[in-house]
Amino acid sequence: MEKLLITGPTALKGEVEISGAKNAAVAILPAALLIDGTCTITNLPNISDVKLSCEILEALGAKITWTDKNTVTIDSSNITSTQAPLGLTSKFRASYYIIGAMLSRMGSVQVAMPGGCQLGARPIDQHIKGFEALGAEVTVEKGHINATANKLVGTSIYMDIVSVGATINVMLSAVLAEGTTVIDNAAKEPHIVDVANFLNTMGADIRGAGTDMIKINGVPKLTGNATYSVVPDQIEAGTFMLAAVASRGDLLIKNCITKHLEPITRKILEVGGQIEDFGDSIRVWNTEKPKPATIKTLPYPGFPTDLQPQMGVVLSLADGTSIINESIWDSRFQYTEELNKMGAKINAQGTRAYFEGVDHLEGAPVFSTDLRAGAALIVAGVVAEGETEVYNLEHIDRGYENIEEKFRKIGAKIKRVTE
Ligand code: UD1
Image 1 (tube, rainbow, N blue to C red):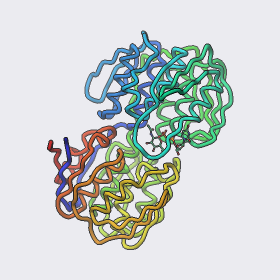
Image 2: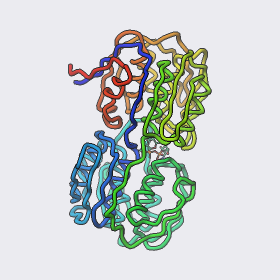
Image 3: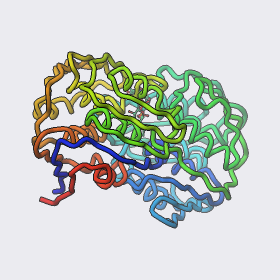
Image 4: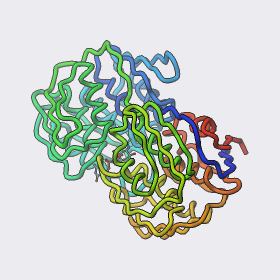
């Protein structure tokens, strides 16, 4: 079993380079199935969710060629199967994008119910509502999803809930449909815009991505033959920004789009951190004990739920009591028990948690319960006194490229060891 050994405390200092966005990459790769030809995707994060996505594409008949660790060429001209390997699709959440993509391309698909982080109930009713509105038949039985469509026809779809996954999935299924599809109450996350940009580069006609109304004019086919670079990862950038604040360090975070980071910069300023914005990089530093704050997670442009645990580390060390309201997921405070083992004083009740700031954290053995919880525990290990052991690294490796190397470069005493 692998674990991370971290010796703290360290004030993180220096420069860190942000990778391509996980949540954009895991949607763009299935989107490549829509192309009757080839495309090249650059700035892909080298993480296990991306590798799994590529394996699924290969099993469906796409030819995948890695030219370097962050660049892949995909030839989807000959899709040979509509059965996605159940063992692979059940491993991560974003495998649901195979449904929208394959419905578009082949009019048929069988996948397992998607897996991924246990953050509470993760229904896909809005995805199914969208597919059915376009004319597909969808059945869910014994953990398997079967979707078929003789023909997809554009229509107007109102999302009952703001959902990143459903917005992208319905977009995928509407790109080659006959006529125009309108998605109302769409999610607005940067990776939704990125997937739309990718599809438009390959020949689609999608307008309004990034607003709550997306209009997709169906086109007969996507021809590809283009190269697309994945947008920088907003959540990885935010993780390092919050690590700078928690550790009272000074980091220059490079290769990011600072506009996407605004919901985070606002809260960092509120807790006493400082920011210098250069557009494609951002300096974050902090010299004081953080001030307490009230946070509510919300869809973009609200404070992202995927940075809630990392913000929880900052607030554990604040000068007073803070509150986090988690409004997206029912069960996203499992990490607080791990932080309490390190001396934090957090009282989590349902979707709300109270953080009574403590003087310092102390190293302890801790277990990542999900991807972002794992990132938060690394930040906690860096700022804690003594030695922290972080277990369950498979969660972290799903979403962060080379994480210990990036932390080591900015001064953290961190190494991966096999027990
Ligand atoms: C995506 C991200 C995840 C992030 C989340 C919210 C990926 C691969 N994952 O997940 O990291 O935490 O957005 O920013 O991009 N819901 C329904 N019915 C549906 C779909 C969603 O009720 O059909 C609910 C969910 O239970 C949740 C809320 O809507 O309460 C938001 O979920 P959604 O935006 O769909 O999250 P994901 O796309 O799964």
